[in-house]
Image (cartoon, rainbow, N blue to C red; front, side, top):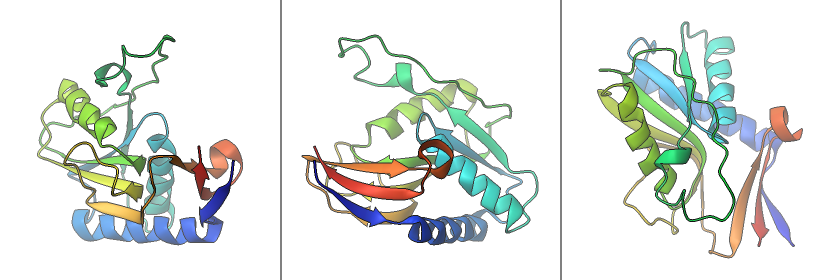
Length: 179
């Protein structure tokens, strides 16, 4: 199995700060905006962005949640093994708020479609945007595009993008791996 480094730790850090600045440009003080990391992998990116916004850019009162989409997926009954749901943590109102969905890799768009369905259980947002670290632009099954993207990657179907986070895997890096 061969792999190529798409982003190293320094590049990930630069991209995270750029994404944070883009969010500030569009959402100012975040009083009407909530950040929601899509479980399982989007929570690491969402938490890191919330930390950067709070610590480096002094934005107060960032509302951060994590959304589990397991049972909203259109393929959740197709596998042989039972699925294990992640925890949804949304301790705020999304009604009439600007919601920013955050996920590590945008691939087919099916996870985002699931998130759009799942968020309706928490109210009707005023607006929904998508932030993703990696956009695999030629792999979409649904007409979904990110509002904010870290890096656009042209990968073929027999390749997988692996995002590693310091908090979880001990390093910040993105790899392109042949399956």
